[in-house]
Image (cartoon, rainbow, N blue to C red; front, side, top):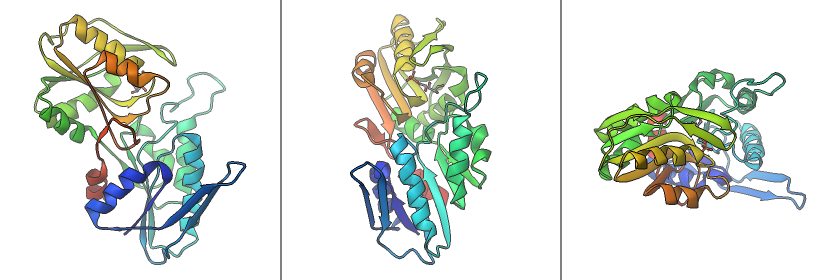
Amino acid sequence: MIVVGGTCSQKLSNALVECSGWKMAGLEIRRFPDRECYVKINDNLDGEDVVLVQSSYPDDNIIELFLLQDAISRFDTNSLTTIVPYFGYARQDKSFKEGEAVSARNMAKHIGLISDKIYTIDIHNISMMDAFGKPGSNLSGMRQIGKYLAAEGVDVVLSPDAGSKFRASVAAEAAGCGWDFLEKTRIDDSTVEIKPKNLDVEGKCVAIVDDIIATGGTIIKAAEQLRIHGAKRIIAACTHGLYTGDAIPKLEEACDVLISTDTLETNTSKISMASVINESLI
Ligand code: R5P
Protein backbone atom coordinates (compact mmCIF):
# COMPACT_ATOMS: atom_id res chain seq x y z
CA MET A 1 0.00 0.00 0.00
CA ILE A 2 1.09 3.56 -0.56
CA VAL A 3 -0.20 6.59 1.34
CA VAL A 4 -1.03 9.91 -0.31
CA GLY A 5 -1.20 12.44 2.52
CA GLY A 6 -3.08 15.67 1.82
CA THR A 7 -2.02 19.00 3.26
CA CYS A 8 -4.40 19.00 6.21
CA SER A 9 -3.71 15.39 7.20
CA GLN A 10 0.09 15.38 7.23
CA LYS A 11 0.61 14.44 10.86
CA LEU A 12 -1.92 11.61 10.67
CA SER A 13 -0.55 10.35 7.32
CA ASN A 14 2.99 10.25 8.75
CA ALA A 15 1.77 8.40 11.84
CA LEU A 16 -0.06 5.93 9.57
CA VAL A 17 3.10 5.28 7.53
CA GLU A 18 5.05 4.81 10.75
CA CYS A 19 2.67 2.27 12.27
CA SER A 20 1.86 0.39 9.04
CA GLY A 21 5.24 0.32 7.33
CA TRP A 22 3.59 1.45 4.07
CA LYS A 23 5.29 3.93 1.73
CA MET A 24 4.47 7.64 1.53
CA ALA A 25 3.99 9.01 -1.98
CA GLY A 26 5.95 12.11 -2.94
CA LEU A 27 3.69 15.06 -3.73
CA GLU A 28 3.88 18.59 -4.96
CA ILE A 29 0.97 20.69 -3.76
CA ARG A 30 0.95 24.45 -4.11
CA ARG A 31 -1.29 27.39 -4.84
CA PHE A 32 -1.16 29.52 -7.98
CA PRO A 33 -1.05 33.31 -7.42
CA ASP A 34 -4.85 33.38 -7.77
CA ARG A 35 -5.06 30.71 -4.98
CA GLU A 36 -6.15 27.90 -7.29
CA CYS A 37 -4.68 24.59 -6.19
CA TYR A 38 -1.95 22.67 -8.10
CA VAL A 39 -1.41 18.99 -7.37
CA LYS A 40 1.21 16.55 -8.75
CA ILE A 41 2.09 13.04 -7.60
CA ASN A 42 5.79 12.35 -7.96
CA ASP A 43 5.73 8.56 -7.54
CA ASN A 44 4.46 5.97 -10.00
CA LEU A 45 1.24 4.53 -8.51
CA ASP A 46 0.69 1.89 -11.23
CA GLY A 47 -0.41 -1.41 -9.65
CA GLU A 48 -0.54 0.11 -6.14
CA ASP A 49 -3.26 -0.03 -3.52
CA VAL A 50 -3.47 3.66 -2.70
CA VAL A 51 -4.71 5.15 0.57
CA LEU A 52 -5.52 8.85 0.29
CA VAL A 53 -5.82 10.72 3.61
CA GLN A 54 -7.36 14.19 3.56
CA SER A 55 -10.05 15.88 5.65
CA SER A 56 -12.75 17.74 3.75
CA TYR A 57 -12.43 20.93 5.80
CA PRO A 58 -12.14 23.83 5.30
CA ASP A 59 -13.27 24.40 1.70
CA ASP A 60 -9.74 24.72 0.22
CA ASN A 61 -8.99 21.19 1.40
CA ILE A 62 -12.07 19.82 -0.36
CA ILE A 63 -10.72 21.11 -3.68
CA GLU A 64 -7.31 19.60 -2.88
CA LEU A 65 -9.01 16.28 -2.05
CA PHE A 66 -10.80 16.23 -5.42
CA LEU A 67 -7.58 17.09 -7.30
CA LEU A 68 -5.60 14.40 -5.44
CA GLN A 69 -8.26 11.83 -6.35
CA ASP A 70 -8.06 12.95 -9.97
CA ALA A 71 -4.24 12.76 -10.03
CA ILE A 72 -4.33 9.26 -8.47
CA SER A 73 -6.96 8.10 -10.99
CA ARG A 74 -4.57 8.91 -13.85
CA PHE A 75 -2.34 5.99 -12.77
CA ASP A 76 -3.27 2.35 -13.33
CA THR A 77 -3.78 1.75 -9.59
CA ASN A 78 -5.05 -1.48 -8.11
CA SER A 79 -7.41 0.35 -5.74
CA LEU A 80 -8.04 3.72 -4.15
CA THR A 81 -9.29 4.01 -0.57
CA THR A 82 -10.13 7.55 0.48
CA ILE A 83 -9.89 8.25 4.21
CA VAL A 84 -11.69 11.44 5.19
CA PRO A 85 -10.62 11.83 8.85
CA TYR A 86 -12.89 14.82 9.42
CA PHE A 87 -15.81 14.93 7.03
CA GLY A 88 -16.85 18.59 6.83
CA TYR A 89 -20.43 19.70 6.15
CA ALA A 90 -21.60 16.60 8.04
CA ARG A 91 -23.96 18.52 10.31
CA GLN A 92 -26.14 19.77 7.43
CA ASP A 93 -27.37 16.21 6.93
CA LYS A 94 -30.96 17.11 6.01
CA SER A 95 -33.02 20.01 4.81
CA PHE A 96 -33.96 21.64 8.11
CA LYS A 97 -35.81 24.44 6.27
CA GLU A 98 -37.36 24.42 2.84
CA GLY A 99 -34.89 25.41 0.14
CA GLU A 100 -31.71 24.38 2.00
CA ALA A 101 -28.97 22.29 0.38
CA VAL A 102 -28.38 18.91 2.00
CA SER A 103 -24.65 19.65 2.11
CA ALA A 104 -23.50 16.40 3.75
CA ARG A 105 -25.03 14.15 1.11
CA ASN A 106 -23.84 16.36 -1.73
CA MET A 107 -20.24 16.42 -0.47
CA ALA A 108 -20.29 12.65 0.13
CA LYS A 109 -21.59 11.98 -3.37
CA HIS A 110 -18.71 13.93 -4.92
CA ILE A 111 -16.02 12.40 -2.68
CA GLY A 112 -17.31 8.94 -3.59
CA LEU A 113 -17.05 9.49 -7.34
CA ILE A 114 -13.33 8.68 -7.69
CA SER A 115 -12.75 6.06 -4.99
CA ASP A 116 -13.24 2.34 -4.46
CA LYS A 117 -13.75 2.60 -0.70
CA ILE A 118 -14.42 5.41 1.74
CA TYR A 119 -13.57 5.61 5.43
CA THR A 120 -14.67 8.39 7.73
CA ILE A 121 -14.04 8.83 11.45
CA ASP A 122 -16.84 9.64 13.89
CA ILE A 123 -19.00 11.09 11.14
CA HIS A 124 -21.71 13.26 12.66
CA ASN A 125 -24.57 11.16 11.30
CA ILE A 126 -23.66 7.59 10.41
CA SER A 127 -26.92 7.04 8.52
CA MET A 128 -25.63 9.09 5.62
CA MET A 129 -22.65 6.82 4.82
CA ASP A 130 -24.67 5.46 1.88
CA ALA A 131 -24.42 8.90 0.23
CA PHE A 132 -20.78 8.16 -0.69
CA GLY A 133 -22.14 5.50 -3.05
CA LYS A 134 -19.14 3.25 -2.32
CA PRO A 135 -18.36 0.61 0.31
CA GLY A 136 -16.41 1.61 3.38
CA SER A 137 -17.07 2.32 6.98
CA ASN A 138 -17.09 4.88 9.73
CA LEU A 139 -14.28 4.37 12.27
CA SER A 140 -14.39 5.79 15.77
CA GLY A 141 -11.95 7.54 18.06
CA MET A 142 -14.07 6.88 21.14
CA ARG A 143 -12.17 3.78 22.32
CA GLN A 144 -8.87 5.68 22.01
CA ILE A 145 -10.38 8.63 23.85
CA GLY A 146 -11.66 6.24 26.55
CA LYS A 147 -8.18 4.74 27.04
CA TYR A 148 -6.71 8.25 27.37
CA LEU A 149 -9.41 9.13 29.92
CA ALA A 150 -8.66 5.98 31.93
CA ALA A 151 -5.06 7.15 32.31
CA GLU A 152 -6.40 10.54 33.50
CA GLY A 153 -8.40 8.76 36.23
CA VAL A 154 -11.85 9.67 34.94
CA ASP A 155 -14.83 8.64 37.11
CA VAL A 156 -17.68 9.19 34.65
CA VAL A 157 -18.11 10.04 30.96
CA LEU A 158 -20.94 12.29 29.79
CA SER A 159 -22.26 13.19 26.37
CA PRO A 160 -23.71 16.69 26.02
CA ASP A 161 -26.82 15.44 24.23
CA ALA A 162 -28.85 12.29 23.66
CA GLY A 163 -27.68 12.08 20.03
CA SER A 164 -24.11 11.51 21.19
CA LYS A 165 -24.80 9.10 24.06
CA PHE A 166 -23.55 6.06 22.11
CA ARG A 167 -20.17 7.83 21.93
CA ALA A 168 -20.10 8.34 25.71
CA SER A 169 -20.96 4.67 26.26
CA VAL A 170 -18.08 3.46 24.04
CA ALA A 171 -15.56 5.84 25.65
CA ALA A 172 -16.77 4.88 29.14
CA GLU A 173 -16.45 1.16 28.40
CA ALA A 174 -12.83 1.69 27.30
CA ALA A 175 -12.20 3.88 30.35
CA GLY A 176 -13.79 1.32 32.69
CA CYS A 177 -16.29 3.74 34.22
CA GLY A 178 -19.97 4.71 34.02
CA TRP A 179 -21.62 7.16 31.63
CA ASP A 180 -24.60 9.49 31.35
CA PHE A 181 -25.90 12.17 29.01
CA LEU A 182 -27.19 15.72 29.21
CA GLU A 183 -30.05 17.32 27.32
CA LYS A 184 -29.04 20.02 24.87
CA THR A 185 -31.22 22.39 22.86
CA ARG A 186 -29.58 24.36 20.04
CA ILE A 187 -30.84 27.95 19.89
CA ASP A 188 -28.71 29.10 16.93
CA ASP A 189 -25.32 28.39 15.27
CA SER A 190 -23.36 29.50 18.32
CA THR A 191 -25.82 29.26 21.23
CA VAL A 192 -26.99 26.14 23.05
CA GLU A 193 -28.87 25.48 26.27
CA ILE A 194 -28.15 22.50 28.50
CA LYS A 195 -31.09 21.49 30.69
CA PRO A 196 -30.30 21.24 34.40
CA LYS A 197 -30.27 17.60 35.50
CA ASN A 198 -29.51 15.83 38.75
CA LEU A 199 -25.96 14.60 38.34
CA ASP A 200 -23.92 12.56 40.79
CA VAL A 201 -20.57 14.20 40.04
CA GLU A 202 -19.70 15.78 43.41
CA GLY A 203 -15.90 15.54 43.87
CA LYS A 204 -15.52 13.47 40.69
CA CYS A 205 -13.33 13.66 37.61
CA VAL A 206 -15.81 13.98 34.73
CA ALA A 207 -15.19 13.79 30.99
CA ILE A 208 -17.53 15.32 28.42
CA VAL A 209 -17.08 13.64 25.02
CA ASP A 210 -18.41 14.77 21.65
CA ASP A 211 -17.74 14.19 17.98
CA ILE A 212 -17.04 17.86 17.22
CA ILE A 213 -16.09 20.91 19.24
CA ALA A 214 -16.68 23.98 17.07
CA THR A 215 -17.56 27.21 18.93
CA GLY A 216 -17.13 25.39 22.24
CA GLY A 217 -20.63 26.51 23.30
CA THR A 218 -21.90 22.97 23.91
CA ILE A 219 -18.97 21.92 26.11
CA ILE A 220 -18.88 25.22 28.02
CA LYS A 221 -22.60 24.98 28.89
CA ALA A 222 -22.14 21.34 29.92
CA ALA A 223 -19.12 22.26 32.07
CA GLU A 224 -21.20 24.96 33.80
CA GLN A 225 -23.72 22.30 34.87
CA LEU A 226 -20.92 20.04 36.09
CA ARG A 227 -19.36 22.83 38.19
CA ILE A 228 -22.81 23.58 39.71
CA HIS A 229 -22.99 19.92 40.75
CA GLY A 230 -19.50 20.01 42.31
CA ALA A 231 -17.34 18.18 39.72
CA LYS A 232 -13.70 18.24 40.89
CA ARG A 233 -12.07 18.01 37.46
CA ILE A 234 -13.56 18.42 33.97
CA ILE A 235 -11.98 16.93 30.85
CA ALA A 236 -13.37 17.94 27.44
CA ALA A 237 -12.58 15.39 24.73
CA CYS A 238 -13.62 15.26 21.11
CA THR A 239 -12.67 13.50 17.91
CA HIS A 240 -12.65 16.63 15.74
CA GLY A 241 -11.31 19.85 17.29
CA LEU A 242 -12.53 22.61 14.96
CA TYR A 243 -12.22 25.37 17.58
CA THR A 244 -13.68 28.33 15.71
CA GLY A 245 -12.90 31.91 16.83
CA ASP A 246 -11.82 32.15 20.46
CA ALA A 247 -13.10 28.68 21.40
CA ILE A 248 -9.78 27.45 22.84
CA PRO A 249 -9.25 30.12 25.54
CA LYS A 250 -12.93 29.89 26.52
CA LEU A 251 -12.75 26.09 26.74
CA GLU A 252 -9.51 26.25 28.73
CA GLU A 253 -11.23 28.53 31.22
CA ALA A 254 -14.27 26.24 31.51
CA CYS A 255 -12.44 22.89 31.62
CA ASP A 256 -9.29 21.53 33.23
CA VAL A 257 -8.14 19.47 30.23
CA LEU A 258 -8.95 19.76 26.52
CA ILE A 259 -8.03 16.93 24.14
CA SER A 260 -8.86 15.77 20.64
CA THR A 261 -7.65 13.27 18.07
CA ASP A 262 -5.48 14.09 15.05
CA THR A 263 -8.33 14.05 12.49
CA LEU A 264 -7.75 17.80 12.60
CA GLU A 265 -4.25 18.81 13.63
CA THR A 266 -4.24 21.23 16.58
CA ASN A 267 -2.35 21.69 19.84
CA THR A 268 -4.96 19.51 21.55
CA SER A 269 -4.45 16.50 19.19
CA LYS A 270 -3.07 14.15 21.84
CA ILE A 271 -4.64 10.98 20.44
CA SER A 272 -3.70 9.52 17.05
CA MET A 273 -6.17 7.68 14.85
CA ALA A 274 -3.33 6.04 12.86
CA SER A 275 -3.56 2.62 14.53
CA VAL A 276 -7.36 2.52 14.11
CA ILE A 277 -7.00 3.28 10.39
CA ASN A 278 -4.17 0.75 10.05
CA GLU A 279 -6.21 -2.02 11.72
CA SER A 280 -9.22 -1.33 9.52
CA LEU A 281 -7.17 -1.56 6.31
CA ILE A 282 -5.17 -4.73 6.93
C1 R5P B 1 -23.69 18.64 17.34
O1 R5P B 1 -24.71 17.98 17.45
C2 R5P B 1 -22.32 18.11 17.55
O2 R5P B 1 -22.34 16.79 18.01
C3 R5P B 1 -21.53 18.99 18.50
O3 R5P B 1 -22.15 18.90 19.79
C4 R5P B 1 -21.53 20.41 18.05
O4 R5P B 1 -21.13 20.48 16.71
C5 R5P B 1 -20.61 21.23 18.91
O5 R5P B 1 -20.65 22.54 18.44
P1 R5P B 1 -20.23 23.75 19.36
O6 R5P B 1 -18.87 23.50 19.89
O7 R5P B 1 -20.29 24.95 18.41
O8 R5P B 1 -21.26 23.89 20.44
